[in-house]
Image (cartoon, helix red, strand yellow):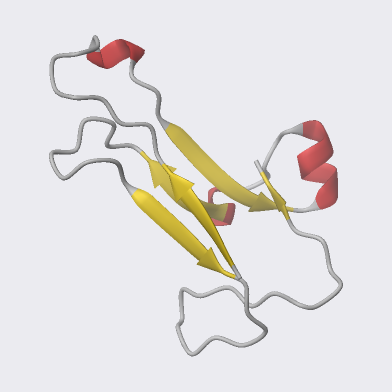
Length: 85
């Protein structure tokens, strides 16, 4: 299974750049989720920081798998809960 994150996108000149939404998504522990406060920048999974990218909205995908051959991949264990903020 996959989780797709599609970042906010604005056509150039359509919105004041200061009003454009930007997001940082963290993968956190349950306590951090409850407090809505990540403990470290190392928990960052994605940054939606290009709201007026010429190629269109940025898209990030998280593949839920038990094993990954990629160093930046995340392994998810069956039956466990995972929290994003």
